[in-house]
Image 1 (spheres, rainbow, N blue to C red):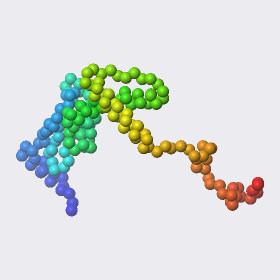
Image 2 (image 1 turned 90 degrees about the vertical axis):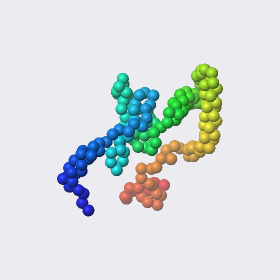
Image 3 (image 1 turned 45 degrees about the vertical axis):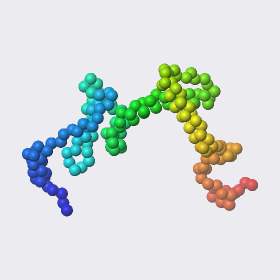
Image 4 (image 1 turned 180 degrees about the vertical axis):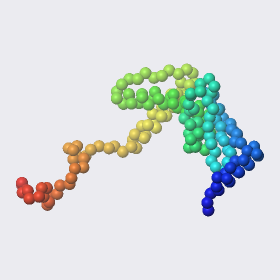
Length: 174
């Protein structure tokens, strides 16, 4: 079957105009920076997602969670609890990740100071993460070279065989 022609498209658009079937933004949510996120569902095709930036900062970009929703890699928009949890993980994991590397190298790194219950919770999260890292490192395979000469591990440019000559007519030196 063929697709409808140009006049059919003109008539369809005219009919939509007369029925006032214009697409409207259905607002889904808003983040802490002031971005307002919406979906446009005007046809039977996929929905179009977008956002309106805040008026005081029109060049700001949305967060990673919202960007994945805008691209369509997430089916549902992120919740405020999920965003808050990810922000807390970012703040607690960044210094601990560097601390673990520094401690393995024998350097001393000062611990960040937190106030009140956040300090205990942060310390518990850090200890749990360090314990998980240790078990992961124990399970990971140890990779090392077996040969004494590291150049033997690399593939040769061209294979050499004892029963074949390397240059035509050349005599073997034994």
